[in-house]
Image (tube, rainbow, N blue to C red; front, side, top):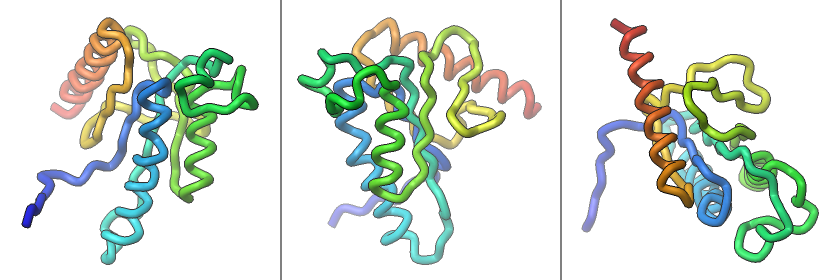
Length: 153
């Protein structure tokens, strides 16, 4: 029998990219989180596992063919649509960030005042279709973590 013992329990999950891959992944990810929090968390050691969706793109008509959106979503931010739909469906917290990760600009999440997003103790899923975008995100995460390391020491 296969058994997995994690070396850490994440406090958040970041899904970066809400297009073809990200929009299809979020329903399964939300269901997994809900199941883990309710069924496999009998002692209540983890009350919440935050999911953040980051994407600055809006739904376009052409997205309806292969992405997990419907016609009434056209013109709305992808991250907001998916966060609202699946946080309501699964009764968990999913927070959108309707911007692209660029340079060292701080991330602004809907409904959150100020919070350090340094990606420490988190699972980061890159659902981006461009190698350049993946490189930019990885640079951003490394910079965020290096700032965190300087602040701690």
